[in-house]
Image (tube, rainbow, N blue to C red; front, side, top):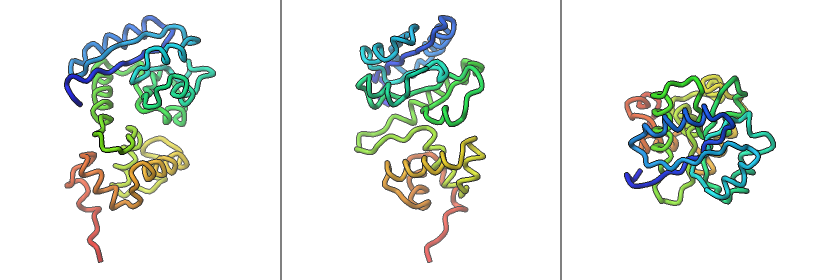
Length: 206
């Protein structure tokens, strides 16, 4: 990511304590140039996102109410906007799976810093026309490279098998790669895995 690239982050929550806590953590991310937008009134969420068009929205999934992530992207006019779930209580894994990253209210400041930094670094794609992969999709690729079955991936990532299959279909559509061998090469080239970690899974051609 270019050092001078600015990232706009919207924090949507009715609690001033939660908003201020996240802002405090974000201000410690010296490796990123961040502009912060606070949204306290959830009924104004769509309008505020349309006004500010942030790169990322941090929001508690339970507070979205009638809003859906797809609707928010459409209404804001910013279809590349990313979503980070602020998990304050036990939330269904299928719900969290729709988000690009998850941070917990119980994460330490250092854990949140690490997650957000990794999130930005991994999602800073080159301008080669490829569609971006989410953090979860990259985790799925790593599991494929390790030779896991769909069921094993589901158990490992706390997802349903159906969700794993959907992710794999989306990955194939985005990358136009339809074989484990192709994904292995992609993962190595893009440094999702080290070649020493997968050398035992690479089978020679007959």
